[in-house]
Image (cartoon, rainbow, N blue to C red; front, side, top):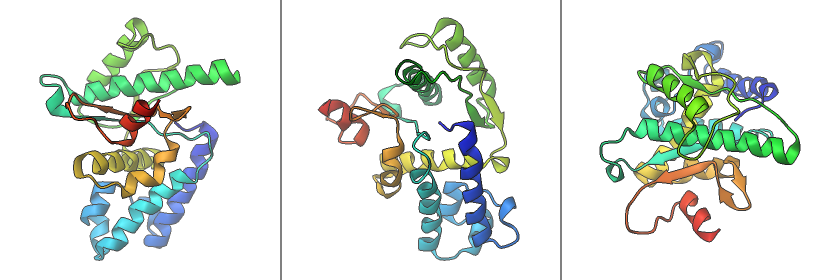
Length: 224
């Protein structure tokens, strides 16, 4: 969640990082976390895996050091817990609701009334997610009505948007934590997730496993 005036400064720092890695060609380089990690595309020129991991952490540090109004949201879905359901659609409904609730809270507590735009990387889900968002505005989600979205989701090519590339890194850090047990990326940005009285409202973990989950999202709710 980025206020419009902050977008320029985040993109500027990412451009500067890209130019330091690829002098004279930085603007054409996309920060795609899985490609960086695997050394694919332009990143194959960086042979040292530790150097590539350092690039991912530097991108995440740009988020960690951003203005306090910049906040992160993510939803991890344990697919075997929900057979027959689409994990992407589950996560999208959850994120729309959390974003809307945060905007409501800003209106009530800070008299800061904002409408939100959701901008996504182009994907095969474009039509279905736009339809879902329309239904959320008219029918609501399972958690209630959605009143603070200004428009249906907009889809852009991630190559032209540093903010979408940053979102890709947030998603990758969550993937590494929940799928690989690798915490080093998420730890960098954990403080940026929407937090209210110690509860990480911005980070959700959906699963029906019997054992108690020890992830930050579950633990913050358990302690609350």
